Length: 419
Ligand SMILES: C[S@@+](CC[C@H](N)C(=O)[O-])C[C@H]1O[C@@H](n2cnc3c(N)ncnc32)[C@H](O)[C@@H]1O
Image (cartoon, rainbow, N blue to C red; front, side):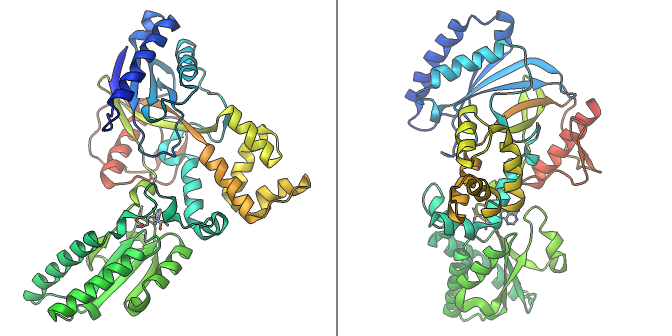
């Protein structure tokens, strides 16, 4: 067995060592066969987000390109959650699963099938959240920034905004000196949230421009880009007195050029903050020199599923269908409240949102690693995507950066070849 310490958060050394001792004792107690132990890996992680889709202890299996189980198995522990009271039982359970024949299924109610990370149902919940943000805010009575770990967005820090404005002004000055400054200067923010940063940026740019007497401010054409129209409306209201210079653009950060090709080579400034972690990505992992594509499956742990099903007044087996309807129609009266109404209980929009979000937050993801047979090279995906299994999609995989997208496509392409 190999133990991987993947992260040691400052101050968490003692917690990590407090975890490793009992873990090793539990491995010994499990009496695992030495052949199983040989291919067992223990991963100690520290998951950044307090609210995440991982249980404190999970088992990850590996398969070959066509989905046949391989010996390699991993137990991954989130050190942040390791002080959880059921931790020892969770480790025992995980060791039992490693010892058993892989059945491809886990405990709990599945919300989707095994699929590459970028196709997980979790991203559909994320999209629903941003598209219906104002409903969520109305239901919870707080803005989304208050729900961030620090309670506010780090995008709006005055020093960062001032630095960005100063750099951009300097760039414009240099272009101007060469006599190449266009009559209209396009600037773009993608994923604008409340629009607070765009407003601050324009305030600062105007002030600097006036101070230096350069007359650039009236030439600015500031584009607010986001894929949620209600968010764009709100951001436009936030930029207030700069409105004359501002336009909104519905665009998908995964392919901004789709909406912006008419401005190709004309945009001189692009900014985005806290958007990448909202974009579906794929992950590749290297284990013992071999590359694997991470696949996931969303589920509700058994007890959680029972609790949520009773709140919704439905059988646990009906949860996947309810989740699907929730994603299609939103957690408004038509989906969740109807179930409550049929049992004589009342559930208005706020209650429906609370329950809908409860289901999303309670969901967890299993992970498995599907082997890719050859090395990754930076080639881009040439045609329709076919994953390691038999599913195919017309769209290429959505990834958070060109680099990872290219790598992932190449990896998937190799998986396809190998399967
Ligand atoms: C976490 S908020 C960040 C807001 C702001 N930039 C900040 O840092 O405070 C994410 C923003 O990105 C937008 N967004 C998420 N996915 C997007 C996508 N695929 N295309 C465009 N905008 C997206 C959301 O609507 C939301 O406005």
